[in-house]
Length: 171
Image (cartoon, rainbow, N blue to C red; front, top):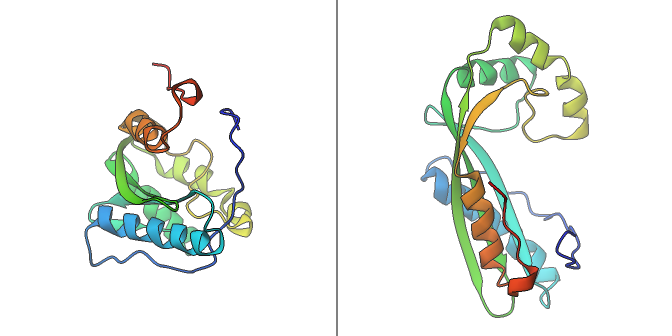
């Protein structure tokens, strides 16, 4: 919208799970590609962008918590550690199909048990709203991100916008 581009958000209707047997970057890229292909098959005259994001820590994908105990386990796993946020992106139009994965590294501060319990209070509301990965409002206190700016700029470059339509994240 900020660019003045006309777009419509169309959720993919296909259900695809991350294949945990392949490399994490390939897995999220394949999910993004599958979503984009599903939407493009119904909208072949448009450019479609599909994406999927996954958190990866200690050689484990962290998906949507099954319940409050699972969310607590995930927060404890992330506490005081760095983890990867992998975003697979696929862009499809009549001329080309491009898929890639970008990685951001997030460093969590150490959380006390009390902070984890406080973060879990809104879990039930988020679960009812269908949030994919909710771990509480500001609960994780990330104190460093690496790669987010470059990831966003790569997507903007990939869209082949005219120079006057482009924008950059300010430092």
